[in-house]
Amino acid sequence: MTMRKSIVRPLILLAALVFMYAPILILALYSFTDATQIGAIRGFTMKNYVTLFTTEELRNMIIGTVLLALAAAFIATILGTLGAIGAFYSKKRSASAIATMNRIPVINADVVTGFSLCILLVVVFGVSKDTYIPLLIGHVVLCAPFVYLSVMPKLKQMDPSLYEAALDLGATPAAALFKIILPQIFSGVVSGFALAITLSLDDYFIATYTKPAMFDTISTYVVNATKGAQTDIKTALWALSTVIFVIVILIVVGMNVRAARAAANDRKGGR
Image (cartoon, rainbow, N blue to C red):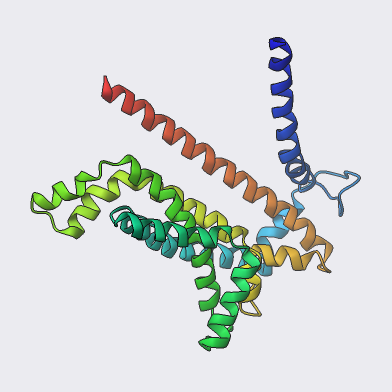
Protein backbone atom coordinates (compact mmCIF):
# COMPACT_ATOMS: atom_id res chain seq x y z
CA MET A 1 0.00 0.00 0.00
CA THR A 2 2.81 2.41 0.90
CA MET A 3 4.65 1.58 -2.31
CA ARG A 4 1.50 2.21 -4.35
CA LYS A 5 1.11 5.65 -2.74
CA SER A 6 4.74 6.48 -3.46
CA ILE A 7 4.10 5.79 -7.15
CA VAL A 8 0.67 7.42 -7.45
CA ARG A 9 1.63 10.75 -5.89
CA PRO A 10 4.50 11.51 -8.32
CA LEU A 11 2.26 10.46 -11.23
CA ILE A 12 -0.48 12.85 -10.11
CA LEU A 13 2.07 15.65 -9.72
CA LEU A 14 3.53 14.89 -13.17
CA ALA A 15 0.05 14.87 -14.74
CA ALA A 16 -0.76 18.24 -13.14
CA LEU A 17 2.51 19.74 -14.40
CA VAL A 18 1.93 18.42 -17.92
CA PHE A 19 -1.63 19.75 -17.90
CA MET A 20 -0.44 23.22 -16.86
CA TYR A 21 2.75 23.63 -18.86
CA ALA A 22 2.36 21.50 -22.00
CA PRO A 23 0.19 24.09 -23.84
CA ILE A 24 2.70 26.85 -23.06
CA LEU A 25 5.65 24.74 -24.19
CA ILE A 26 3.85 23.77 -27.41
CA LEU A 27 3.16 27.44 -28.12
CA ALA A 28 6.81 28.27 -27.42
CA LEU A 29 7.88 25.55 -29.85
CA TYR A 30 5.64 26.91 -32.61
CA SER A 31 6.94 30.43 -32.04
CA PHE A 32 10.25 29.26 -33.56
CA THR A 33 8.63 27.85 -36.73
CA ASP A 34 7.12 29.08 -39.99
CA ALA A 35 3.76 27.53 -39.09
CA THR A 36 0.76 29.82 -39.47
CA GLN A 37 -1.45 27.72 -37.20
CA ILE A 38 -1.03 25.00 -34.62
CA GLY A 39 -0.74 21.73 -36.53
CA ALA A 40 2.11 20.83 -38.86
CA ILE A 41 5.57 22.12 -37.93
CA ARG A 42 7.44 23.67 -40.82
CA GLY A 43 10.95 25.07 -40.88
CA PHE A 44 12.49 26.65 -37.80
CA THR A 45 12.98 30.42 -37.90
CA MET A 46 13.25 33.53 -35.71
CA LYS A 47 10.82 35.44 -37.96
CA ASN A 48 8.14 35.75 -35.30
CA TYR A 49 10.56 37.35 -32.84
CA VAL A 50 11.86 39.75 -35.49
CA THR A 51 8.26 40.74 -36.29
CA LEU A 52 7.50 41.16 -32.59
CA PHE A 53 10.31 43.62 -31.93
CA THR A 54 10.36 45.46 -35.27
CA THR A 55 6.63 46.07 -35.81
CA GLU A 56 5.87 49.53 -34.42
CA GLU A 57 2.29 48.63 -33.50
CA LEU A 58 3.37 45.65 -31.41
CA ARG A 59 6.31 47.50 -29.88
CA ASN A 60 4.18 50.46 -28.80
CA MET A 61 1.54 48.11 -27.37
CA ILE A 62 4.15 46.27 -25.27
CA ILE A 63 5.82 49.46 -24.03
CA GLY A 64 2.46 51.02 -23.15
CA THR A 65 1.36 47.92 -21.25
CA VAL A 66 4.61 47.74 -19.28
CA LEU A 67 4.51 51.44 -18.38
CA LEU A 68 0.90 51.08 -17.25
CA ALA A 69 1.78 48.05 -15.13
CA LEU A 70 4.73 49.84 -13.48
CA ALA A 71 2.69 52.97 -12.72
CA ALA A 72 -0.28 51.01 -11.37
CA ALA A 73 1.96 48.71 -9.33
CA PHE A 74 3.88 51.66 -7.84
CA ILE A 75 0.70 53.43 -6.69
CA ALA A 76 -0.96 50.18 -5.57
CA THR A 77 2.13 49.20 -3.56
CA ILE A 78 2.09 52.51 -1.67
CA LEU A 79 -1.64 52.30 -0.95
CA GLY A 80 -1.64 48.59 -0.13
CA THR A 81 1.37 48.87 2.18
CA LEU A 82 0.01 51.89 4.04
CA GLY A 83 -3.37 50.17 4.31
CA ALA A 84 -1.80 47.05 5.78
CA ILE A 85 0.27 49.05 8.28
CA GLY A 86 -2.77 51.10 9.26
CA ALA A 87 -4.90 47.98 9.75
CA PHE A 88 -2.14 46.24 11.71
CA TYR A 89 -1.88 49.07 14.24
CA SER A 90 -5.64 49.74 14.40
CA LYS A 91 -8.04 48.46 17.00
CA LYS A 92 -9.43 44.97 16.43
CA ARG A 93 -12.83 46.12 15.14
CA SER A 94 -11.31 48.65 12.73
CA ALA A 95 -8.72 46.15 11.51
CA SER A 96 -11.44 43.57 10.89
CA ALA A 97 -13.50 46.11 8.91
CA ILE A 98 -10.49 47.08 6.77
CA ALA A 99 -9.65 43.42 6.11
CA THR A 100 -13.25 42.73 5.08
CA MET A 101 -13.34 45.69 2.71
CA ASN A 102 -10.04 44.56 1.23
CA ARG A 103 -11.46 41.11 0.43
CA ILE A 104 -14.33 42.50 -1.65
CA PRO A 105 -12.22 43.59 -4.68
CA VAL A 106 -10.30 40.31 -4.45
CA ILE A 107 -13.42 38.14 -4.56
CA ASN A 108 -15.42 40.40 -6.88
CA ALA A 109 -15.40 39.51 -10.58
CA ASP A 110 -13.13 41.72 -12.70
CA VAL A 111 -15.91 42.37 -15.19
CA VAL A 112 -18.07 43.84 -12.40
CA THR A 113 -15.18 45.97 -11.13
CA GLY A 114 -14.38 47.26 -14.61
CA PHE A 115 -17.99 48.05 -15.53
CA SER A 116 -18.72 49.77 -12.20
CA LEU A 117 -15.54 51.86 -12.41
CA CYS A 118 -16.46 52.90 -15.94
CA ILE A 119 -19.89 54.09 -14.76
CA LEU A 120 -18.50 55.82 -11.67
CA LEU A 121 -15.58 57.64 -13.31
CA VAL A 122 -16.92 58.33 -16.80
CA VAL A 123 -20.67 58.75 -16.23
CA VAL A 124 -20.87 60.07 -12.66
CA PHE A 125 -17.65 62.11 -12.38
CA GLY A 126 -17.33 62.93 -16.08
CA VAL A 127 -13.73 61.74 -16.51
CA SER A 128 -12.97 61.43 -20.21
CA LYS A 129 -12.20 57.94 -21.51
CA ASP A 130 -9.75 59.57 -23.90
CA THR A 131 -7.41 59.94 -20.92
CA TYR A 132 -5.59 57.15 -19.11
CA ILE A 133 -7.03 58.12 -15.71
CA PRO A 134 -9.89 55.57 -15.60
CA LEU A 135 -7.56 52.79 -16.79
CA LEU A 136 -4.88 53.64 -14.23
CA ILE A 137 -7.39 53.91 -11.39
CA GLY A 138 -8.96 50.62 -12.44
CA HIS A 139 -5.63 48.80 -12.30
CA VAL A 140 -4.76 50.36 -8.95
CA VAL A 141 -8.11 49.17 -7.57
CA LEU A 142 -7.34 45.71 -8.95
CA CYS A 143 -3.81 45.48 -7.55
CA ALA A 144 -3.83 47.30 -4.19
CA PRO A 145 -5.81 44.61 -2.26
CA PHE A 146 -3.27 41.96 -3.30
CA VAL A 147 -0.40 44.15 -2.09
CA TYR A 148 -2.24 44.40 1.23
CA LEU A 149 -2.45 40.61 1.40
CA SER A 150 1.28 40.29 0.62
CA VAL A 151 2.37 42.78 3.27
CA MET A 152 0.09 41.78 6.14
CA PRO A 153 1.77 38.39 6.89
CA LYS A 154 5.14 40.14 7.21
CA LEU A 155 3.63 42.62 9.66
CA LYS A 156 2.23 39.76 11.73
CA GLN A 157 5.69 38.18 11.87
CA MET A 158 7.15 41.45 13.17
CA ASP A 159 7.34 42.39 16.85
CA PRO A 160 4.53 44.98 17.21
CA SER A 161 6.35 46.74 20.05
CA LEU A 162 9.23 47.86 17.78
CA TYR A 163 7.30 50.87 16.52
CA GLU A 164 6.34 52.02 20.03
CA ALA A 165 9.91 51.47 21.22
CA ALA A 166 11.25 53.67 18.43
CA LEU A 167 8.80 56.43 19.37
CA ASP A 168 9.79 56.14 23.04
CA LEU A 169 13.42 56.57 22.04
CA GLY A 170 12.64 59.85 20.29
CA ALA A 171 12.03 58.84 16.69
CA THR A 172 9.32 60.65 14.76
CA PRO A 173 6.45 58.54 13.34
CA ALA A 174 7.88 58.98 9.82
CA ALA A 175 11.38 57.94 10.94
CA ALA A 176 9.99 54.89 12.75
CA LEU A 177 8.05 53.94 9.63
CA PHE A 178 11.00 54.17 7.24
CA LYS A 179 13.77 52.92 9.56
CA ILE A 180 11.97 50.28 11.63
CA ILE A 181 8.81 49.00 9.95
CA LEU A 182 9.63 49.09 6.23
CA PRO A 183 12.95 47.18 6.55
CA GLN A 184 11.08 44.46 8.47
CA ILE A 185 8.38 44.05 5.82
CA PHE A 186 10.44 44.88 2.73
CA SER A 187 10.24 41.38 1.24
CA GLY A 188 6.44 41.48 1.47
CA VAL A 189 6.38 44.89 -0.22
CA VAL A 190 8.56 43.59 -3.06
CA SER A 191 6.34 40.52 -3.46
CA GLY A 192 3.27 42.73 -3.54
CA PHE A 193 4.85 44.99 -6.16
CA ALA A 194 5.75 42.00 -8.35
CA LEU A 195 2.26 40.55 -7.95
CA ALA A 196 0.71 43.91 -8.85
CA ILE A 197 2.75 44.08 -12.07
CA THR A 198 1.62 40.56 -12.99
CA LEU A 199 -2.05 41.36 -12.31
CA SER A 200 -1.90 44.54 -14.39
CA LEU A 201 -0.22 42.78 -17.30
CA ASP A 202 -2.78 39.98 -17.16
CA ASP A 203 -5.93 42.08 -16.81
CA TYR A 204 -8.46 42.11 -19.64
CA PHE A 205 -11.92 43.05 -18.35
CA ILE A 206 -11.02 46.21 -16.41
CA ALA A 207 -8.86 47.43 -19.30
CA THR A 208 -11.65 46.75 -21.78
CA TYR A 209 -14.11 49.00 -19.95
CA THR A 210 -11.71 51.80 -18.93
CA LYS A 211 -9.02 52.13 -21.63
CA PRO A 212 -8.95 54.85 -24.31
CA ALA A 213 -10.24 53.70 -27.69
CA MET A 214 -6.85 53.94 -29.42
CA PHE A 215 -4.87 52.17 -26.68
CA ASP A 216 -4.46 48.42 -26.20
CA THR A 217 -2.86 46.41 -23.43
CA ILE A 218 -1.34 43.03 -24.24
CA SER A 219 -4.51 41.24 -23.13
CA THR A 220 -6.95 43.36 -25.11
CA TYR A 221 -4.66 43.32 -28.16
CA VAL A 222 -4.32 39.54 -28.12
CA VAL A 223 -8.10 39.05 -27.88
CA ASN A 224 -8.75 41.51 -30.72
CA ALA A 225 -5.95 40.00 -32.82
CA THR A 226 -7.65 36.61 -32.86
CA LYS A 227 -10.64 38.17 -34.61
CA GLY A 228 -8.96 39.10 -37.87
CA ALA A 229 -5.40 40.36 -37.60
CA GLN A 230 -2.74 39.53 -40.16
CA THR A 231 -1.19 36.08 -39.90
CA ASP A 232 2.28 37.43 -39.13
CA ILE A 233 0.84 39.47 -36.24
CA LYS A 234 -0.92 36.40 -34.81
CA THR A 235 2.22 34.28 -34.94
CA ALA A 236 4.28 37.12 -33.46
CA LEU A 237 1.97 36.92 -30.45
CA TRP A 238 3.17 33.33 -29.96
CA ALA A 239 6.64 34.79 -29.56
CA LEU A 240 5.30 37.41 -27.14
CA SER A 241 3.71 34.70 -24.99
CA THR A 242 7.01 32.83 -24.92
CA VAL A 243 8.96 35.93 -23.91
CA ILE A 244 6.53 36.68 -21.07
CA PHE A 245 6.70 33.06 -19.86
CA VAL A 246 10.52 33.08 -19.83
CA ILE A 247 10.64 36.41 -17.98
CA VAL A 248 8.22 35.12 -15.34
CA ILE A 249 10.31 31.97 -14.85
CA LEU A 250 13.49 34.02 -14.43
CA ILE A 251 11.81 36.32 -11.89
CA VAL A 252 10.40 33.42 -9.87
CA VAL A 253 13.73 31.57 -9.88
CA GLY A 254 15.55 34.75 -8.89
CA MET A 255 13.16 35.42 -6.00
CA ASN A 256 13.44 31.82 -4.77
CA VAL A 257 17.24 31.92 -4.93
CA ARG A 258 17.27 35.20 -3.04
CA ALA A 259 14.88 33.83 -0.40
CA ALA A 260 16.99 30.67 -0.02
CA ARG A 261 20.18 32.72 0.44
CA ALA A 262 18.47 34.98 2.98
CA ALA A 263 17.25 31.93 4.93
CA ALA A 264 20.74 30.42 4.84
CA ASN A 265 22.25 33.67 6.11
CA ASP A 266 19.67 33.82 8.90
CA ARG A 267 20.56 30.28 9.96
CA LYS A 268 24.27 31.13 9.98
CA GLY A 269 23.60 34.26 12.00
CA GLY A 270 21.55 32.30 14.52
CA ARG A 271 24.40 29.92 15.29
